[in-house]
Length: 296
Image (tube, rainbow, N blue to C red; front, side, top):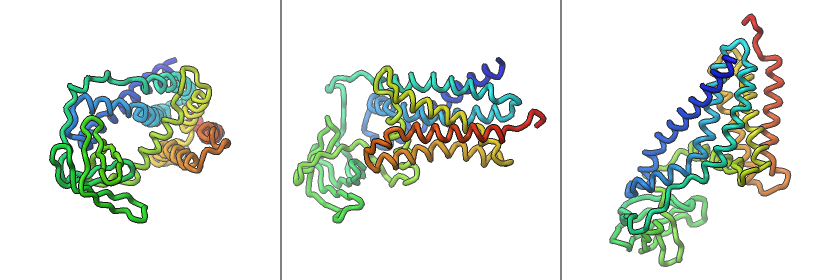
């Protein structure tokens, strides 16, 4: 009973700590993307990231609790408690977090400045550079679209819509949102990792109060995280084992995102459950051989 209580306590505290830490790291990034916006804008954008932050926190929390159970002579009890606690926590929060939104404030209370000159934006897979800024008219405008035959295009002017925070290019009639302001190119590895996390979170988030498919995805996902504990005994180097346990969930998420990009094939619909369930069975099988003896 003591190990069960300690496991639950550490799991909840670790989840809260990592979730809070991710929110703290996200604040300066959001400010750098749109420094002209107010507190309401940053808060509303931050809330939309909570689902992805929560899934990341769950992965890190499982590893943290696994390291605690590693030194316990009877880790299986804590592992089972962790499995059921994870499922009970993940499903209702993933169901509730997308519905959390700040109340809409009247447009008269929202103050948006015109976009500043010599600023680079990234939107719709395009890099947009704006030269001069005079009230609503912007120009010249340079648009760089990677991996196209003519990647660079220059337009003499465009009109900025402060309510929609978008740029209307007169020559083409295209409307480009200007939410993501950048000063340097984001590292490819980090941007790909974040994209995979968002895709995976959206994949397993329940779409209704009782979603059987989401229950299956979340159940196998938590089961896999609980089963990864056995890999902590894979070698004599605990740091290597811990990094392997941490890397596997993110590699699985990248695989799911890659397979989903191949197309909506019926057989791929349950890829998350298949991958998570397969790894869970494999790791639980390893645990019969990798678990230390009571004399260790």
